[in-house]
Length: 221
Image 1: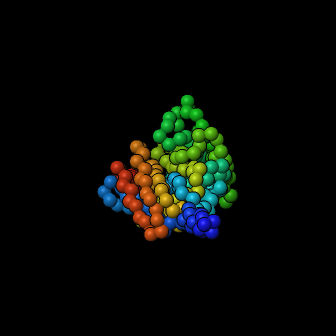
Image 2: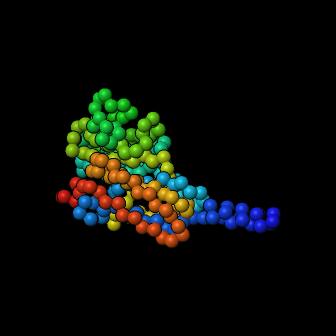
Image 3: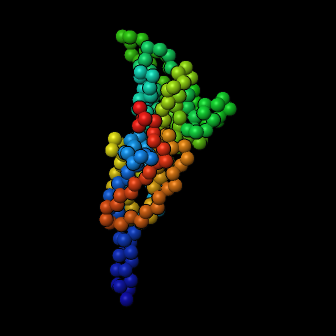
């Protein structure tokens, strides 16, 4: 009897620690077209699997030709971000929680940096910032006080189960714990958060599609 109970316990433990099959998340816009630069996050409830590699704790955001490059960066909380101005004229970097205050002087938890123009023949002078302030988790809107059309984003995640969609609008997760998983999506032009999707992962490969309610601005160019 004791042997049977031990065997049953071992089987339960094995079932609890098994990894599900690969999970693919596709993000499409209102017209059904793939959406790059969307952030996909998983809230994992099960045990087991293998924790993915940690998100970057260092990143570089350049200001080049009046744009933030990359337009969207995904980093871990506490990451050190280096801002570099490659344009010949001065820029600012203003940051605040995306959708909150829109760089209002009364907004809390934001930041403001000044980057001098790049002098030809001399190395650019980067300015660094550590994203460890309270309330920093989530999407942070970047702008330039001097050039109001410039927009960029840094998404700070508390979970390593996060990835940014590529040109085909998809991300792939391996060895997610078997069991219930909640899928959330953030995209810069989607001002109202999409409702999360709850999946029950098994050993079989899984795929889910998340559709935005907007057509991102890059698709209208």
